Image (cartoon, rainbow, N blue to C red; front, side):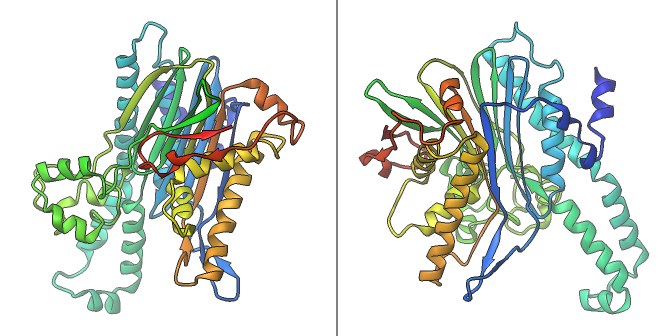
Length: 400
């Protein structure tokens, strides 16, 4: 099995082994690329789409993931190929208990990052070789003037090394749901209540510099929390956990804000919860990159719960679309339009937005089947309750 795994995960992105995995028919994915807006109503992408996702169904095992890459696509490309290999090639067995399954998920995250860093060895070696070939003591300006090609190549290599990705993954195994994440991509579980409402619970944790638990962890490593709060970033990003980001992991001592840490401050250790036995109350699972909920926050003139707003849009589009991908795409399209409309009326707001990816998994097959008949009779839209003003990490309730 080990030799098989080694051979298939080394394939190029154009020959990705995961292309042959069965797609879950009860799920769909929608996405939009990042945009910077212009006053004339136009817009342009600042970089290629860096989000990645998958939604697989192998026998009775289901695996879903959303990955928000930054500083390039290398980390998200690697992770979207390698993580399924770490969880779908026989590592999960029927005799495992919940803690053992969580252990397998945790190990998968660690192994994927280790493999990613190993994939950077050639780039690191080339960068070091170029640095050693240039005279010592040159200023940045002098180096650029005398060795423009070498400096350009080193910058390209630096960009390649610097990339990272968030990850939010949902696993359904033995009819139980497990969720794991690093970074600020989110997982929402929607369940039906006896009163006919839908409860919305965020199962992931936002690993960002505004998270008090993460600040406590960083303080225990010897970092100046007030400095981090002032910068609102840690190294070159806001996420305190990720896969990749070699420079703020192996090279964290080179950052003034991180240099006092007693060990690596940015880590790939995931938050994991589960297993939740799947029963008749399960309505849908939503995974999304931060571009979705942050666009909602930025476009709103009042305090709102973006998790609830996303679920409300999903519920509305379930009545209008004829497949799950159509539902997911319609939701991100609506969020994108609302964000751009806000810019056009208030140009001091919403000047750009990030990539957006939304993955939806419905649990009731009869709902998925009814999508073949848009606006199926007997199904109503959702409306918000006062719970929509609760904190984003708490449950909220909407009425069907």
